[in-house]
Image (cartoon, rainbow over all chains, first blue to last red; front, side):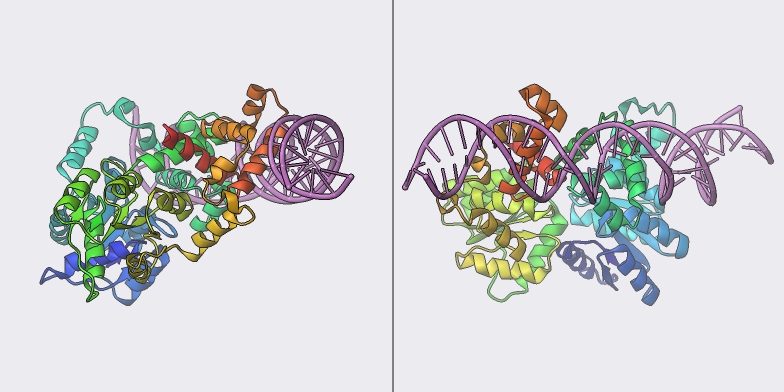
Length: 210
Length: 210
DNA sequence: GACCCTATCGGGAAATACCCTATTGAATCC
DNA sequence: GGATTCAATAGGGTATTTCCCGATAGGGTC
């Protein structure tokens, strides 16, 4: 099952997957709620989940699926830099991470690997995670943005997309107060003076992260 | 010809396009240089160009193509909010803009429209552009930003630099109230919803200017 | 002289930012 | 294996900002 909020991207996955004799796409969803609904109808062996969805982060979806349907294997995809999301994905419950810039063959490889219940990461991401778990992983080589929690990062991204506090709250089904709290946390963690600086950094980050 | 730096996305486009009897994908590129190289080998009738590429903005590619190969028609796609890029795309030389969140049928529709040499935009983007140009036919070929008065432009630039209303007022020796008025004026002239949108456009303008 | 644009401000309500505090559950740390 | 940190969630207030309503005064222009 494919979960991505861009129809054209879902087409791309479908084409790749159905090109393999032993793989089949059993469903497509563009949001968390739609994904959960479809899982209950036709539970898949594996889900390919994009990090950014219409109604929140794919990370949330991964956590939910792991809690409710622990037998379903998950592979995260994102167009973002994997240093940001590879580790978060695995912690949330996925078995692998693939960047959209990677070659299609990598995705196929990842699918088979994850179906076997094995972890799939790029060599770079693997090394990063190993480096971090051993020895002194001082935060010094870490981007401050990596220190944001999953939720905070999500809100940060939304701010960068031009969403207001209110609209973010609606989209993520949270109280505006909660979003405000995240904004404050982000400001502290990134050492930003005020709302303007926060907006500016978020917008620049979104524009430059590709 | 498809220009996008995500192989999986290119697959999606290919599948959609080749599903039409009278359309054919003659090339794929993931960067500006690759695109230009391929154009010289096999010039296409139409190019589908993503805004964010490996080696810079798709807007630059559009400008280059318009300058060198004026007969090639171009359609811009982006995952970002179209308010940011639709107008810029047309200004750069594309004939249409499609958001990746839109339905695949929209893309197909856009392709045929652009092949006929006609403009394709979403109804919302069309209305936006019309709203901006009505009541000022003599300005209609001007960038909306050029319609800002000197003072307004000055404030706009400061906003883009990350300055707050208060600090701009101090810097320009004005009442904060005056700066607020300019912000409102700018918002009206550029047809922007709220302070967030204003900030976003100002930041982007400053980044692009350099 | 009527009209429009620009530069400059104020009033006042609504929205937001900002700072503090709090609960719950999970993870981690001696 | 209780203490402690951290993440996610959100409410209570006050300070600021936004936003929409004017307003005045000077310059063009037709």
